[in-house]
Image 1: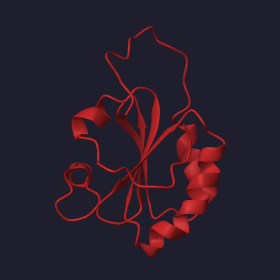
Image 2 (image 1 turned 120 degrees about the vertical axis):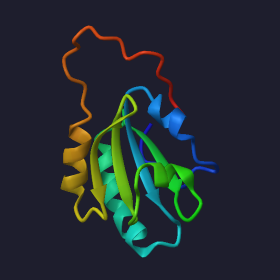
Image 3 (image 1 turned 90 degrees about the vertical axis):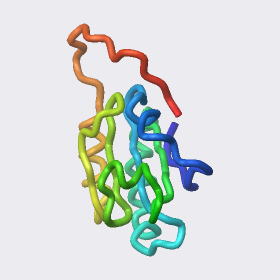
Image 4 (image 1 turned 180 degrees about the vertical axis):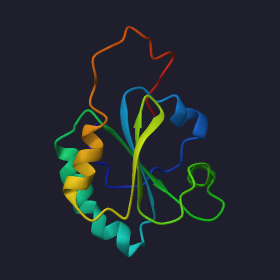
Length: 122
């Protein structure tokens, strides 16, 4: 999966996000946010080099529980997840390279033999 240009019809629960398998980019914002619109070409280009990363674009705002659970205050906020755990975070990214560096932190490392448990994809 790669870049997703539209927000999910319904945001996943925090429990579902915590159970994600592999690499994921959780993007919080709104369709009308100017900062979000300016960041889209950067996000799309950076994700182009990482087709293995699941991109979850979540509309945020008052009463939206998922964004509150991550402490999101400004848009866009990009949260980089590996097996459901936050690895990196960017708020209002200004460059494709910054997003690319955070995505690189999600690259698989040598296995320690530990099982990731019962992880899923959304």
